[in-house]
Image (cartoon, rainbow, N blue to C red; front, side, top):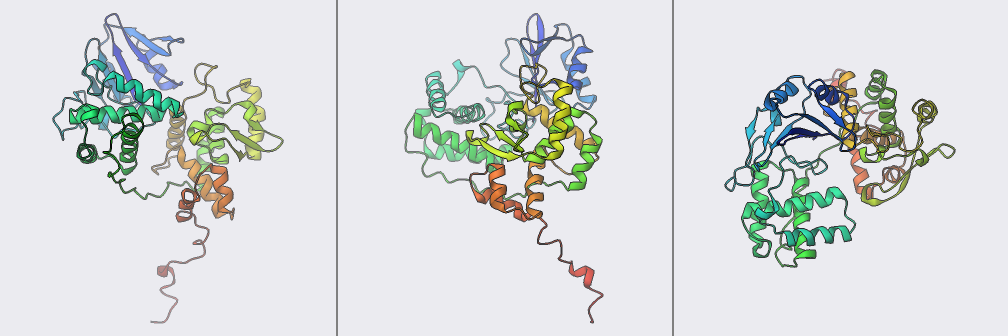
Length: 404
């Protein structure tokens, strides 16, 4: 979930934005905003009625939640979460069991929606922050993993109102139960929280309080898959050449959002019809295929946009497009095609795997193309592929063909 942060300072209002979005840029420019290309943010006059501006933002169906942080205030205001109006949110000072209803479940791949309190008032002291950060960097953990692990350890200490060295096994269990009940965390999110806490209490502050914690049972959800007709409809209704090519490459090669936006021209080997995915999930390199249709489109794309480095650059040509902007491109294309499935950009990757399986491609090859470490991950596509069920008739369709 993308979130817009608005910082109301003494002399100005700052709105950082990462990745180009025409709607957002037009909105802030029309309100006197000036773009700072160095800091990647809009600045606006301090006399603007911020609450009114955000009300306009929501009414124009831009639909992105906002967090307002006023100068010298540790209590943010949120707008647009679950369609609600402005509400004061003192997240960390709520009594145990009470959670702000304005905030949806955290997405660890997105910015944290409610800022953490100042370090000096934290129950997770700076010495532990530094040690945890150093340990994670030494282990080469990604920025997303470091951010989520740090967050959940600080959240634990704030919720239990205890220092890390005073924490007990039952405290961790109580914390996980409370966030599952109060914030409706999924099993996957609870597992990330538990992994972060386990990392701290085994690698940073060794303490025998984590081994008895059992992993939450995982939700067994099937991936959302689009039909070939739906995907074709999306491509036909997307008239922006750059956006259409991005969507085509995700589907044609089974790419993740973070992989497609980080592609460089030199990663595409036209002669071998392959794409070199560098440092994909788990920091693993792999090769995947590239389609003839994409190759033909790339020839025109290179010339039209003078591509020399990043295949899909952002507002700053020296930087690649951010993943969230790629998600927005998909969401708009889905809307243009009037497809009502609860699909995301990742659904194109799911569709790539499912359609290959339905076409008779060996599942081991699909595993390699997707970059899955385990065949078990790839096997979930057998539950949505129709290869073996296309010839099966429903008993309702044969009910009149048999003698009673």
